[in-house]
Amino acid sequence: MVKSERKTLSNGVTVPAIGFGTYLLDNAQAASCVLDAIQDGYRLIDGASFYHNETGVGQGLCQAMDEGAKREDLFVTSKVWKDAMGYEQTLESFEKSLADLGLEYLDLYLIHWPFGDPELDRSTWQALIDLYKAGRVRAIGVSNFMPENLLPLFDMEIVPMVNQIMVHPGWKQETVTDFCRQHGIQVMAWSPLGRGRVLNNHLLRQLAQEHGKSPAQICLRWEIQKGFIPIPKSANAARIRENLDVFDFELTPDQMQALDSLPPME
Ligand code: A2P
Image (cartoon, rainbow, N blue to C red):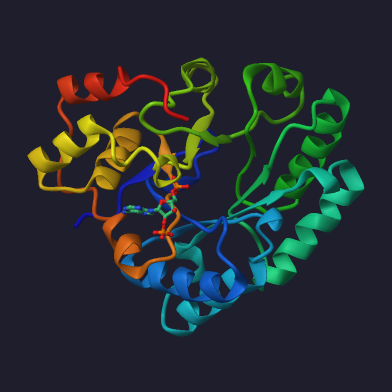
């Protein structure tokens, strides 16, 4: 299994082509699943203050590093939640996430959702710019930002390097993903398995059979070939491993197009 594929962000920092998502894991699950994921070969671990499990994620990271994983090989993400937006609160929330995770720096810090008030988004973004310039985080970006949310940030010193949005077969989000591509913003796909709900789709099952893979692996392969970075979440050790095993096959252009044409499935 090839586990070393990476994508390069606009600032030159490289990111693993797939990550492990931690949403909905409690602290105990996060600790054991993050450790499992790193032992399996994941290097990108995606979290957020809103997930209320960063101490658990931190325990998993710490144990993995005790067992030989190197901090510089890991790529750890967090996000500032809506209730901490604004310049000063964002800086405080960053420090809290870092302390909970037990880390000295983050690899990626994101604004979790646009607030809907461009001035608040801009003051929050200024805090991320200052954290980046101070070397506290290696890359910065946003999450769930549509083009109209991104545009007010474009006259600031740094343009987001990443936009993390919900994408999966049947939920292509073409307007925002095309916009991000045009502006050099890397798309990360949350809910890349459609929260597990799209996995019974007939086409996904048929392609899974043709490739000797699972429907989940077909979803993840589609996202990788679209140029996105999927961050599947699982609380199950076998499925965590399965979701990383997506680098030994390729979907044909016809198969990609068929998946592109699926009707909307949120
Ligand atoms: P579980 O945690 O029991 O594995 P998403 O990342 O799109 O939000 O999807 C997460 C959901 O998909 C979770 O309910 C998770 O359940 C399930 N899931 C994760 N990986 C797989 C897989 N390989 N096959 C089937 N279901 C999966």
